[in-house]
Length: 217
Image (cartoon, rainbow, N blue to C red):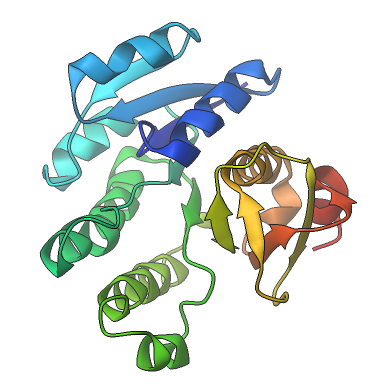
């Protein structure tokens, strides 16, 4: 059984992911949340919780990661915060969890990034969105430079539609939408398939089953 620390568990993808993990016979979730009052959702699903803020230090985050086999970074500063929180959560928060993984001896790390985090994407992004793309770009770069068994997932435009269980996943796909529920299922399938280690892919709605899409990467 692989124990997975879900960072940003109280977010929309995070909640779907914990639910999916708790239904798996190969995975179990530990939900990292910012406030104790967020715990009941996860406890009702039988998931362990730990209260840690991404603005805490690396040692505190590493303590939360003790005893887990994998970390999934699904956190985000959200659309209603300024560039300051984007730097502190989407960049520094991500880097701190990567360093915490190393400190806690956790080898497996899955990053939920943005659809396109290339340098070109930063340059072409609207001024209000560019800090977010830049933050994700450098967080991804930091992870690539480690020896962690990592996978970087670049989802398309996220929707709250019900998951279809069908996606398209490849190193480069046509820009499109994808339900958050399907992204959560893609993450779980990624954790269950070691062939995804060292890979990076974009994912949007498509016609392949999630398992088939992951196996064809």
